[in-house]
Image (cartoon, rainbow, N blue to C red):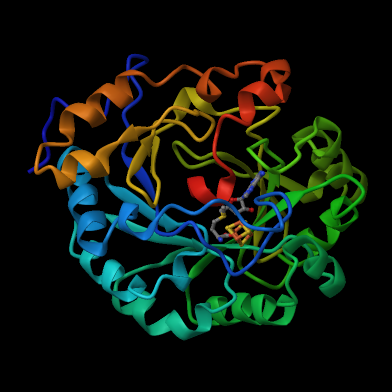
Amino acid sequence: MIKTNTILQDTFGRVHTYLRISLIERCNLRCTYCMPEEGVQLSPKNKLMSYEEVYDIAKTFVDNGVTKIRLTGGEPLIRKDFPVILEKLASLPIELSITSNAVIIDKHINVLKSNGVKNINISLDSLDREKFKHITRRDNFEKVYNNILLLVKEGFNVKVNAVLMKDFNDNEIIDFIEFTKDLPISFRFIEFMPFDGNKWDASKMVSYKEIMDCVNTAFSKDKIERLQDAPNDTAKNYKIKGYKGSFAIISSVTNPFCDSCNRLRLTANGQLKNCLFSAKESDLLTTLRQGKSIEPIIQKAVQGKLKMRGGMNTIEKLQNPQLHTKNRSMTAIGG
Ligand code: SAM
Ligand code: SF4
């Protein structure tokens, strides 16, 4: 039964109904903006959530008002018990979705369908095979590209995410938009964000404004339609009139959307993060394993959520490596 006096409301009145669960720290790609080439320091196996623990923690959140869960990672599909986790979570009254790099998603179509997953986010940072190889440090372009087409054919709602980097893939903005001409996908440009180990530098980032300048140069004003964003949407949505798909910009750096944030994050080793940018974590797994209630820890973590980007409320603070390198790398947070 959902409680009305929710422990998921923070001191700014934001009610958190969306939980992103990272199932795994490992990944079958090595995207340069996400993790270092050598990978990241992994948690010992006995410190990672089992599928039962994922379910127990998720259920506590759902009992307290969470209505939406997204499974992410690392790469969630390389976890051997992914189908079991999906099936267990699908028994909860939630909208269940996943974020994946799509390298092996063709093997999971049936299990995704049978467990009611409709919304799938896929990463694709270039439409050029060599560039894809360079950024992911793996040669999987065809697989990912064909799997995106397969997901669309199979009737999933597909969003494709690209992190734009100056002088690398920023010359593909219009190609990415053209990709939405005949495909009913939402193509989302994500501003490059700073995390531990990704050598962030503001000069590498392509901003919302720069993306829109490029779009405005390529298309006449009357062809560009601003769409209504969904409540709590992190993206500003647009469409080129007549195209089957749409495009959007996620501007966490230059235009943060913290005021309407409804998200919490659970890492694969059972730590609750109240914000993507917060270095602070609350250990739910240890308490769960002690057989105690995790609700007081969740409540305290939510109450401690800062107004904006984990306290990095200016670009200057975000740019300060002493602040952003205290956080994990993105692959260990679960983007
Ligand atoms: N492996 C899956 C994937 O790539 O979609 C799920 C995990 S990945 C960490 C989730 C999302 O985080 C991806 O869309 C990725 O592009 C994004 N991401 C990773 N590092 C980022 C960064 N430094 N800035 C912006 N987005 C980032
Ligand atoms: Fe893996 Fe996703 Fe990170 Fe790329 S963005 S290294 S696919 S977790």
